[in-house]
Amino acid sequence: LSTSTAVRSAIKHVTVIGGGLMGSGIAQVAAATGHDVIMVDQTDDILAKSKAAIQKSLGRVAKKKYADDGEAQASFVGEVMSRISTNTDAVAACGKTDLVVEAIVENLDVKRRLFTALDAAAEEHTIFASNTSSLPIKDIASATKRQDRFGGLHFFNPVPMMKLVEVVKIPETSNETFERLVNLGKAMEKTTVECKDTPGFIVNRLLVPYMMEAVRMLERGDASARDIDTAMKLGAGYPMGPFELADYVGLDTTKFIMDGWSQKYPDIEIFRKSDLLNKLVAEGKFGRKTGEGFYKYDKK
Ligand code: 3HC
Image 1 (tube, rainbow, N blue to C red):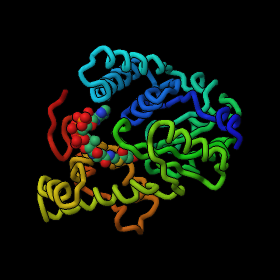
Image 2 (cartoon, rainbow, N blue to C red; image 1 turned 180 degrees about the vertical axis):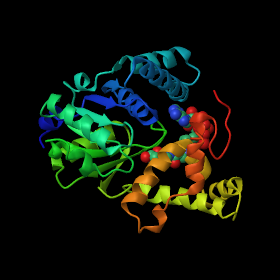
Image 3 (cartoon, helix red, strand yellow; image 1 turned 90 degrees about the vertical axis):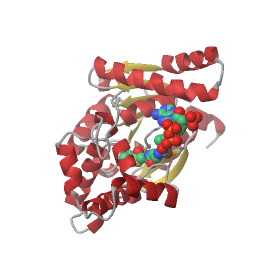
Image 4 (cartoon, rainbow, N blue to C red; image 1 turned 30 degrees about the vertical axis):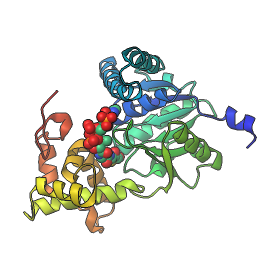
């Protein structure tokens, strides 16, 4: 690539579909690293909450970046916020963008329907990416006519703090698309790893079975949740124990991943469902976000 081609093909404008934990984190970091961002969700009310969450998180980042300088902190937050606009119409929001990153519900049909609609409206050069944590990228990409301009871009929660992005290639993903996604990851100040389109890519393929094995340990009565968490933090150097992490990621999300995998790969032992996890989710205990999961939290 000549420099001018590289510059021309750099991703400058990003449309993020989904204003949840992941979508708002991706929008925040893209904007903080100089990209123009449109964040899309179903209602203005949801989008207002997503923007408030971004503002709060930016405040924490600003405190570190400009210690003791309230003015610089406020101007940083204001400048980043000014690069994020919102829209409740995904099709309208992807008409003039370099990249669409989808971070909506983990439901294949819903994702496919969304991308089919966007495919008809987006410009030729626009790349589509999914932040799915567990669905095959190929199954989502095949809803479009731009599989060469389709890939996975998988971020980690909390997006502003976690330094990794998994860039997922399907056989159809062109080298140029892959390169542009890797370059975007770098421009967002993340480290990228290349992943094949396998269940859970790298991180979740290892992390989710590990969390589920901890749940099974608890179900068998081998140890308490507190002790398992303490053991993994102090004995293995993890920043959070498996139960703290499951509550942080969301038990609903963890269950979504496990349900999909156990259905698709019934013979793989570590993908087996857990009664305890299913029970907590059925009771509406999704972890931190609902105030209770394996632990109880103060609702803010
Ligand atoms: N925005 C901005 N800053 C944040 C933040 C956020 N959302 N969350 C935490 N921080 C900052 C804090 O401001 C703090 O900064 P400081 O050190 O300068 O004071 C720093 O992070 C540390 O935060 P805390 O003191 O509150 O707590 P911790 O030291 O425990 O750090 C953590 C928090 C970074 C979340 C750490 O516990 C951690 O790394 N946990 C593991 C997270 C993890 O494994 N994530 C991956 C989950 S899997 C996934 O996302 C995939 C999906 O597909 C399921």
